[in-house]
Length: 392
Length: 171
Image (cartoon, rainbow over all chains, first blue to last red; front, side):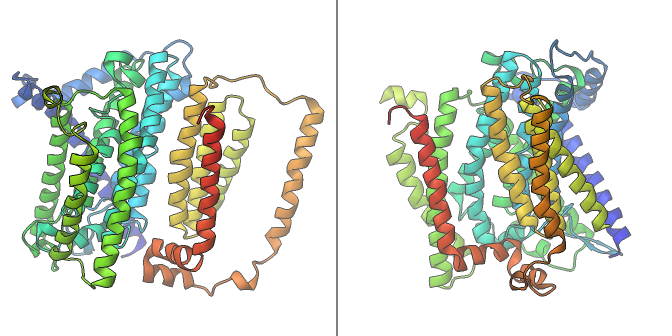
């Protein structure tokens, strides 16, 4: 492939991914409100267009036409830059996530990933940790003490949960034997969903899920905006399109986090129970089917985000910090040690290659770890609800 | 092409480093330092050291600088304070010291690296092809140089313990 062809194909891929994320985000804002309404036995926005489908367009138009406000004594430059700083990393992260089987064209097979970097997963960790700059600077530059508190909380929360998130994902990389996400997907695609990483690394997935919720500032971890205590936290002073940018950034982060959970733990674009989609020759049908599969999995996690948001109450700040440092971090460390030992034993000592048997053996290790964790160490503090505690 | 990119990022790195030490607001300084780190990461990528580039962004820009910002905001040091640059004499001394640092650099520009640490052309590329980008770093680090690595980690542990002892009045 010549340099020019590479450039053209990459630009096309970027445009397609960007458009898909933006449309997804628009629909997601609607989905959030409709699902919330459904869970609360209301109707939700259903006036603009069929089933309210044009509501995001109406919201966007309203936000563009609204007045932009600038608080007195605000740091003008940073105040303007902050929404962009939080928005850009949310989109950059998606660049390394493979979203379908290679597309067969007359110019050759084109892998469906914007850039299959050799550092893959590390790139995601690096870029996703930058999003917090936008939130923190927004909080600081607004010259508002509630905003500042929100920004501070965002920074502290991000640092606290980032380590647990990285640690739990290292287990995935141990199984894949590499850090590129296309290798991670390829290793999971053996024709049976038993080799999806969620089976051998169930506890790791749980840690990753919780940390991903915290990293995207979604309930029950939305302390940076906590409207009950901080008005609206870091975006209190923002109006119109700048406010909207924070919203878009939050939802883009959700899309990326969902795509990441899909890729790392649920086989990426792999269609379960068949290897038809993982083997050449590549056809258009395979590409469409695998992209649809990827979309369905990502959609499920996005629904999970919304579902959790309208189900769980918000943490207190001290609970958030205690969970991050006293539970998640030690748990992730111990988990990584145990899993690494188990993989070494199965692979080096017993000489097993990664297949369903290997996955189930590791899954058994997970169960053996989960039982003492939830029933002995926890003694009902995290797992059971308040009703069970009152009964005890 | 590569040379152009190198000079562009080198200019950004030096320029933002200069801005980092001359700004009066600590927040502005911290942000210019972040930009410097980014430009350095780009230079590492040009050198085919993507792993180090990513670690640079991940550890320094993503974690340590966030912590810096956190502390600056927590102590409310964000607004521009009084300058501590005092008069022409101070400028002269600082300039002379800075120029003194450039002298060994000028010497380095002409010296070639010793033959002992020079690998034949293409060794790194072959190594990366064979073991992957991370493997090429991990194998020497955790096999050949395991003992120095562990000693370094002890050093960091001692630093952490020291920080805790200093920060906590009562243990």
